[in-house]
Amino acid sequence: MKIGENVFERTGESTMSQRGFYAALGGIVAFGLWLSSVVAAEFVSWDPSLWMILLVGLGIPLVGILLASASTNPGISFLGYLMVAIPFGMLLGPVLNSYSPEIVERAMLYTAAVTLVMGLAGLRYPGFFAKIGGALFVALIGLVVVRLISLFVPALANMTLIDYAAAGIFSLYIGYDMHRASVMPHTLDNAVDTALSLYLDIINLFMSLLRILGHSKD
Image 1 (cartoon, rainbow, N blue to C red):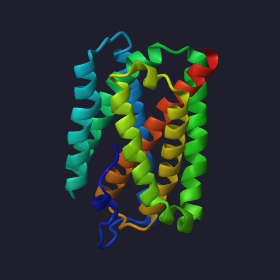
Image 2 (spheres, rainbow, N blue to C red):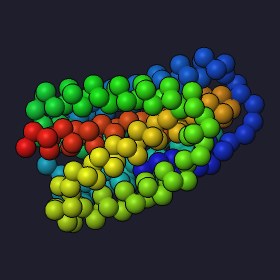
Image 3 (cartoon, rainbow, N blue to C red):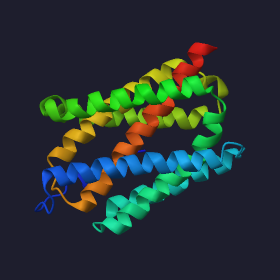
Image 4 (cartoon, rainbow, N blue to C red):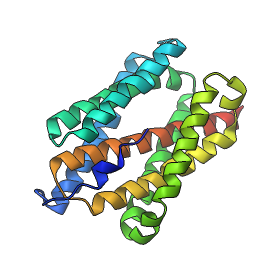
């Protein structure tokens, strides 16, 4: 899931310095990831049904994304952010419990490295990332459709190729969203909304890498 294009197409005057904007952006992303990890630790033994997975992993986060993207109030946008980070943490708990600590640590390390590299690339090569937005969006829609189908087709869910594709898509999205953040008005609400988009990039990249590393151990 991604935030709607309207968030990154906002115009107006900046109300924060560039340094303050990126500090807020990084802090909010870090907080969301931390919050998800805390919630995950409390839900390691949770065994949700398929419909609960759809509600917690899709329904509530989708409402949060729409709430954040439609609002220009940073408080409301942050509430939407919490409606994504907390449910994702709930689902993350039982997922992490199915992997060894070594695999989880490696996935975290690789995710951090890719996030840093792609984030800097998004700022360093704006021309490239400005051109790939349409292709990334089409690829993302295709991935979402495949993921939904895989909930009902176990054989499809175990295809490692899908995880590699997902890792590539979300890695590029980190650079793309950082590029878009660099050209939007620097406001606190935009920092929250952009943090939500980056959070989704990072958490989805992490999940993809986790599955890839897990398959490599089988």
